[in-house]
Length: 435
Image 1 (cartoon, helix red, strand yellow):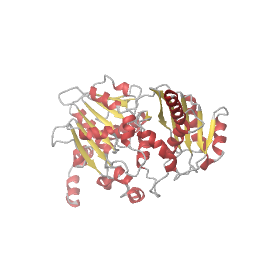
Image 2: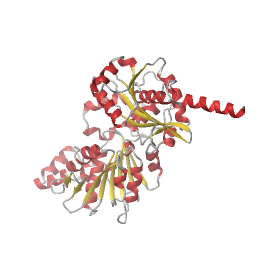
Image 3: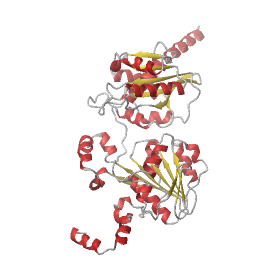
Image 4: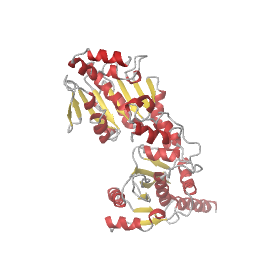
């Protein structure tokens, strides 16, 4: 409506009517944020850029289903913190979008919402797929599915989405080219809504557009995070997502050796790089040595902060060694590690070749299916499959560097019982057999 007419209409409403209108989602929402009516669907996939309003759309969809009389509308977040802080208690979460007469009671210890009409919403995390086993629902909201570490959580949720005549789920996510996202996009039962950060520009701070959009608009990262595109791997990248997906495992076998590898940032200031950190191990499968990336522990911390995290992982995983790249931190890394725990087994490694040269033999092991990621390590995999060694403007791949150091230590270094020794043993056995 024109501004003048809009003011006249609003002025004619009573106070109660204006309050009702303020909570009326169909009146406020953009058409792309309303439950689709164009055709029948089981999964409504909203893949959109940051700031599109995905969380609000998911929360309002749950609210609408509850109002329509559905009693079992469950929630699944990428992590327990995300489910609580974004989906339930966030500024666009369920508690915020519901007026007082519709707002559910949040039972934190029971991980559920109890609605005024008696309906219940169980709250799950994709980090615990087994908790979804046997839990039934009529409707569901899955948030940031592309960041779920264990795709098995989606399978368990689907098995339980079976109550009522028309089970449905809304999936809100910033897209990543994961196998799971591509499978859902290709499913005939999926209705896909594409969205951009620009769609919601009127409700976003101007400073956000100045600081973020101007920097990333037109880049590959911007196409994913702003335009909501599902991108293929960077053609110049050394690592391929298809190789990672084919070798992915849900659980690692018993490890014969484990290390925590650190690629420290030069500084912990706000604009500095993250400190890359991964835990990795090796195990023999069918007589062949395989590597397993157990966890991505990358963080943005002070030296004492990341040292404590590394030592904690060292203890928890019963690791054999902590290794650190000395180029940025020199002997400081060992000093800060030992200030946390004097007894940690530590080895300093020094880069004498470029990142791409160091990464190539590790990439070859990925191509051979010899390196396995335990679960979905989203940010790490994005960095590995995006980094182009020929792009001199690309951000330093700290997570990838940590992987390269870990795999090199476990499988490629001459001073380890690694892949080189294995091949030497195989060659010796072959020679003996010929003799």
